[in-house]
Image (tube, rainbow, N blue to C red; front, side, top):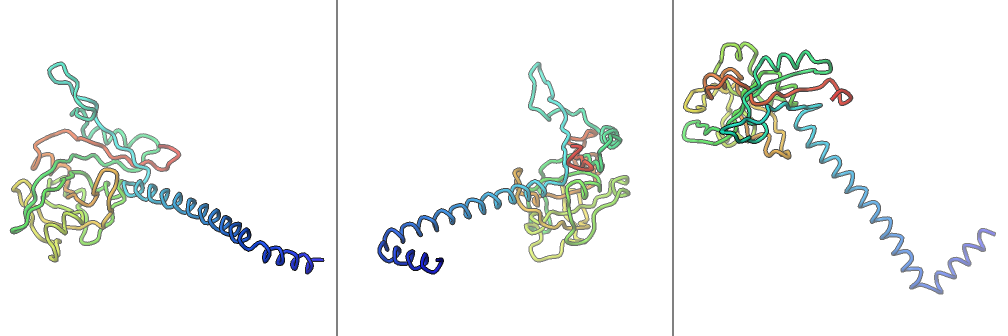
Length: 232
């Protein structure tokens, strides 16, 4: 009977207390180790997925080829062969949702007696969707700002914190490469990625960056958002 089996089992445990304790300990440690390993694996997976999602959903980045100088081939991406027409052409490709050409370079930014060296990204408003940016304050610049080469800027959180401390950046004037820019917005924090601090940046219109800051006509990268993972 069941009750007799239980009694016999309990008597066996009493007679072999140490063996029973070691068996229970082995089961507890084994189950605990499995749970811990599964939890760590899921945590790492979520961390990786979050880091990738922070860069942008269904994101592809088009780089130019390698430049050649004096018979020697330079690093990949050093060419100056991409332009805005390439971005327009890419947008016509089936499976492409958004396209944002870009140029970037580091500059010292000045506000009052504060200064901070950060990356200036010149691009178009579509970068908001391509890179999954969200605004914490203010607004993003418009296509008209890009067409008129307006001196407006949107700050990443790290750049905003280091330049303004407790001052509201929106509406303030900063200097990029000695030229005045009006801050129109501040982005929500995105955090670290494999490429570094995603919030340590200032975004300005592409044409402004090309013609008024960097003095170039080409683009360095083209950010592409596919319509889904199945078409990447």
